[in-house]
Length: 204
Image (tube, rainbow, N blue to C red; front, top):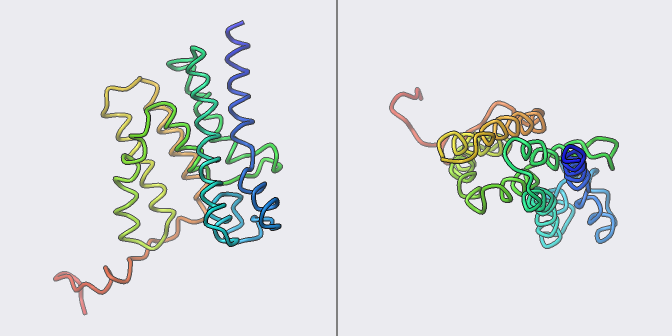
């Protein structure tokens, strides 16, 4: 019975993560399929690109929520330790491979944030920012910043006194984010302000 209950939590988390809130918001409020905007990603960023920062913020909140809620509820129901790993990963997979979008999906960063929030609390955001923000300041490609933040979470999982399964979850989560960003990981280019700095070892 416990196994059936656990499998139901994994399925529920996957389906919850698969709800394409950004696509729904685009259709309902902007009369736009956001998959035709920007990079074609069915995520909150393209809601902003479609013309609304407020709706983009709403989409981000909902995408974080769909990662948070099933993991939080599963923990409240006693799902813990290694049994929680697939439940925590499921909404992220749901966002990346949505059953409501023919198993296509977004880049799963917001759902990642929600799942981690349910496990470790709000500290996930400053930890993620420790590498994301510096990389954003240094290079123009946002994908590198997104991926670097995941490595900060791996470091956090390995070096803190957290549950043993968290390190495995962090690695699997990072591999998934690398996959969803694979087309955007071009050779990084320095920000103009940094490229303009004359360093002693750079030739003129």
